[in-house]
Length: 147
Image (tube, rainbow, N blue to C red; front, side, top):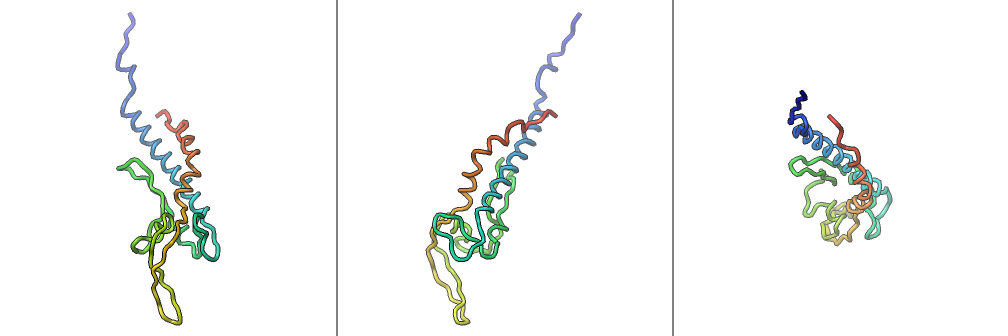
């Protein structure tokens, strides 16, 4: 007589879901790291302003240093971008990416003066995502491992 347990023929749902969650976290973190690296390498150390439409130039390195990424568990996504800048309205990294108006402070003749200026877009995050977009599906290949 042959005996078979039907329950042995089904997936263990908890094990499968745990493997998928683990793979998703790893793949999204890798994607964030690749996009961050592409954004950081696009910002070159140069004197003067970058031409509109090109990534901004780095003068002191703070923009490059403060581009980070993190896995956002509640939204099942990864967030990549500059953080930790002083509060301004709008923040400098956003003005560089999208363009807009901001206040610039300059020291002239020992006095600190402020001037409202228009900044043309100098995108660095969107081009980094577009550069890495073709590689992102490949990160999923063989990402779910048997427990």
